[in-house]
Image (cartoon, rainbow, N blue to C red; front, side):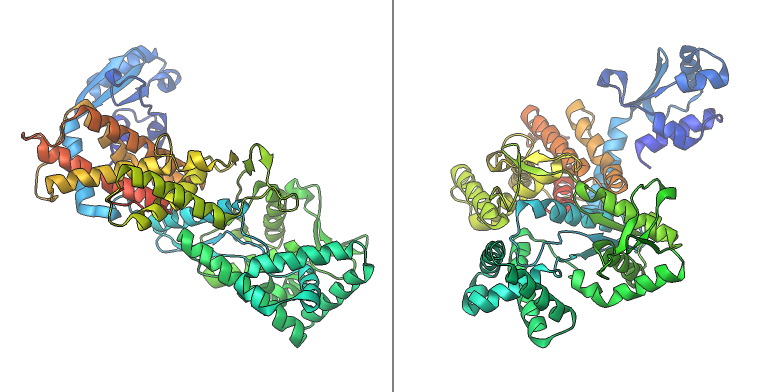
Length: 563
């Protein structure tokens, strides 16, 4: 039982008027540690008990069983709890040493599935920093939900269908070079796409030809299908090279094309339920009763289906295939209206599981304050950016530790980790300005700062030749170590909050806080001094490193043992 739950349960024993959960939510952390570790404000009981909050706090201080605490005192309208540092530090350190990387593992999910729609780049388009947020937020949430006991299913819903493939086929047949595409798929296909679009502006027959090729593709024409499949395969090879660099994997690459033969069933279901309404020749579903002004456009007047029809098919397929407990879509905030419509249409179809679907939106990445745009050339491509981050990390590692044996691996872990961490430490609904120098800095609230704190601890443990034991009695009573103990004890709750709010920045900020607290401890404490607390201090180092490494892992960031 964590200390907050313990305090809430002790108060609940003497305050039957309030539920334990309500008491738990009212507990505060005093700004000054001299005022205790946790405080209960008695204001909430004033109306119920018809007494002054100060009097209530004093009476509670006398009633509460204080043997589990250092002391319990009333200060004005607050009941302040001072925790037993020695007992709690022993309990926390022993728990981390026993559990190792499984510390804070939870069983909320009971192996139920969480479907995570993430990354989802467009075939034949470059993978830019714009795709990074969906990729790293989705990857981190997959790790977090696994830690909560769920089984995540990471789905890369590729943009692998659409009229642009008609244009690409026309361009490739005119100017394509098979070897050039194989060597640099995205670059070559993008060049072809830009060139054919430029030609289409002056030659109207290009559009007609492209429409004809896309029609052939939709009808299953062998040549069109073969070219489309090749464009997809070659693009995916390049994407996977990038994903390998980022250490991101997927369970499914079912993209837009996968649902081509599943949309008729959606239309039939909507028709059978009497939900399709004609509007200007198109088929729509009215959603006014859900507070959504614009109807969902399901089928255009020319018979073409739309993006939402495909997403309806995908949602039905995923529920049928994975029977998910949660289905999350890690997609930019500009798609908020689309996902509101999607959920509302499914609800209208009678699928209550639509309540288990969540749009995990995020803000934009800017460069120099300007919005990124492929069309305007203001774009940051991921591959060269990762390479530069690794080079910057390598330079700093060379300066700090020129004799490090595995410099290349460490530079990769630090460079890639720096990009991921910087993205994830930002509240996802906020955007951020892309600044590689700030990202890769070893100072400030960065990934390298946290990684370096972990590596420093590993160095201390190596020097001390410390071997943790579950049989030993480790306990500490000083103020500096107490700050770290409280943070380590809080780790399970941090993970739960991250999962509840779909917000990896909670873990990133926690990791920064823990690293800062340890560095403060390191500066003020002679950890290796020979006395009766030496092993307890080393156990604290071991527990801190274990939790830092696990926090970074949940963010998809590696924790090198040396830097």
